[in-house]
Image 1 (cartoon, helix red, strand yellow):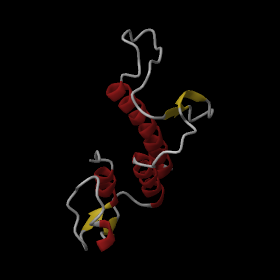
Image 2 (cartoon, helix red, strand yellow):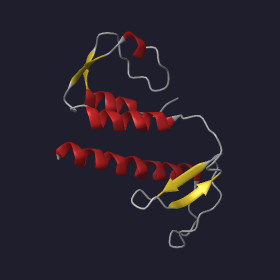
Image 3 (cartoon, helix red, strand yellow):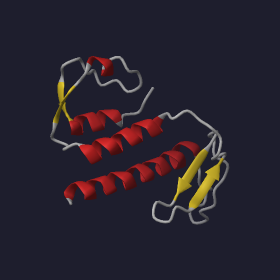
Image 4 (spheres, helix red, strand yellow):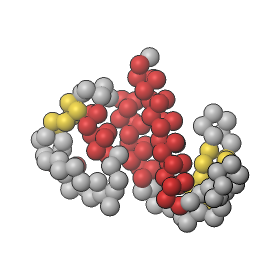
Amino acid sequence: MKINITVKFFKCFFVIMITIFLTLNNKVFADELNSKEFIDINVPSAIVIDFETGRVLFAKNADERRPMASLTKIMTSILLLENCDMDELIEVPGEATWIGGSEVGLKKGDKVTARSLLYGMLLPSR
């Protein structure tokens, strides 16, 4: 039950974080917060979907093919939450040490908790 609640929390957390990112970095909302009207976003494509109903709340070029980017990090984080105990120690394979993006200084053979790997994975990429 605890893991299920944690997974639901992080799914909601990721949706909220993406929405906040779009709002703060791209000025999604109009100047007056009470109007809640969307204005043009300075990104090539975006979509916001109501998790419960599947209803599209906002879309801009949503059908355009785009690189996965941070969506890969989000999906990997969800899989980590669903399949690992957060206190579980995971040994870092050599293949994981050369991947670019977020730099957390992992070395082959390091033993790190799933929680620490999750936090490191969610750092901003370059």
